[in-house]
Length: 300
Image (cartoon, rainbow, N blue to C red; front, side, top):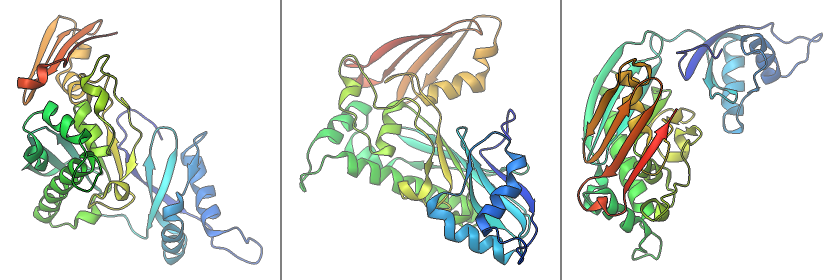
């Protein structure tokens, strides 16, 4: 179930024997038993928030149909059950930019792109650059709470507007979207997760997390299916985030024989030099955020 290039969410065909007086196995136990051969050696569970919904859907489908499974790397979560195979299994790939957000709606069944759109990042009112927003995030607001809550709410609202437009253009409800992948710099990811950014711009520039685990969309207030996993491209450090890793992978720099250079010119600037044997990155936020904000990272 963990083959290379498999999607984060998959449909798994299930045909289980219905219960009887001779077999009184519980509905969810029956479902997990039927799915076990499809995920050998992997922890397989139904998360608490989805117990009732999955059990109800499994019985309504008379114990046959398609399990919706989130493959989270460390285990597999069964989050829904469908009586028939859907025509599309939509997901969103999000570029979490400092100034703009860009997203593509894709079908995980076919790999086809269903739409693409952009949205201004609503956080811009709290600062045009990363450093201004970091300071805002740490400052107490009128209600006494730090500004990180305001920044998180604004970026979530921006993402929701973008997702709703994408879904509507494809003739779908936003709640039909089953997964989201996020590529953003370390600070933007911290803002979305509501994490403390105080130390990101202070030596030795240590983030609270480089590789967050997937988060259910409902926990972030995103207008997707509530059990949709929101997966974050991992970063390396405070100024070497998942957006730069995404660029390296997309450009094939990590597989190149010859030495190449990748330059990401955006609100924040990053430069990567290297090939498949070595990579060196110099990254720092543009403008005033360059104050204490440049780091050199080596990767092998």
